[in-house]
Image 1: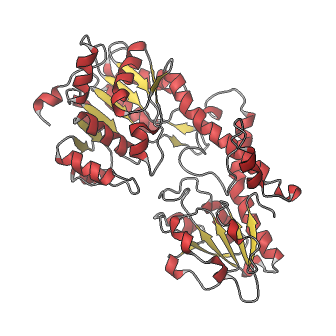
Image 2: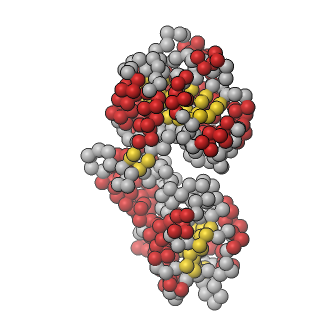
Length: 462
């Protein structure tokens, strides 16, 4: 990057014409810093760099920084990201540093997309975001624009981030801008989502912040840019999205638990009900995992005094589903006359969703723990998963696909990885008996009624 590009043009409070501001942003005269180069941060920084040609990314992991500066992408399973990172680094549009303060020094737009953690009590922990804000604030200049993309509890920007920025910089809102623009991105399709699969939500701490955020994301996102009243509204939008899904899944899982009384395939009923345009019930399953949906309700339940009985009930229901699924295995074994303490079970899929190497809140771990507690010998396989310690500590024997035994007493599908599609589960049935198959994702329904299989689905009792 040339010295001219790192000098920096401010967008917040600019008196230049809108056309000149757009040009400054896209031709690299507005240096951008992106803080956090993880699963969501690296794709976001790459899109920013592709648009502006002048991005410095900051990450505390020196191996990540070294790899990016060598043109390497450390995020697996993101189509197009390998090529994009390599191309951006080669044309000097993107570089990485390990010190956030170094990134903040020359930047005029600061974008924070770092993890929002959960503490031991389930409450949101903003310590990483607050640390980044201190680093930005200590280098903040008049006219700078700060954007938070990490999911935050409502009021975080005005109550927690803004005071840090003002204290560290000695400036006040109005001399710099602050906006919340939540990421709306899923692993495995990050570039597509960032570039415009969905409208971008932007909300500023003042009108000028909203204007600048809208200008910026009009270039990053080819879809609509939707402005909302303020940062708190924008924060609420992202949390509401996750809460809606959690509550909806909780409803679906509660309906699934009625299958014995109904004697039906609840998923069939749900699919038929959803043909009515005002009904959109989600799909029941073995549990809700990942770093988003299980945690976002806590951003409201743990942060505010208002009662949240609906969210709490959904969380409780969804948290119970792994145990509910494991009990299906044990009940099936008993029905086939097999003592769980003498049984062998194959667990298929350990990551929280197909194709994504992430086990945070994955339902497979409590399923393994419950089966081992009951005395079952558990083999577990997942070609996507690289996180082995937790499952080994729980008592699972981690194996490769090629090492699947000739027979098992039961199989439980937790995460339907693509590699499982060619498995012939009926061939694993014990001699003279039936294989108990617990289908945690309604992906094995073709096995219902098979002579060699005792099929039990989550939400299927026919």
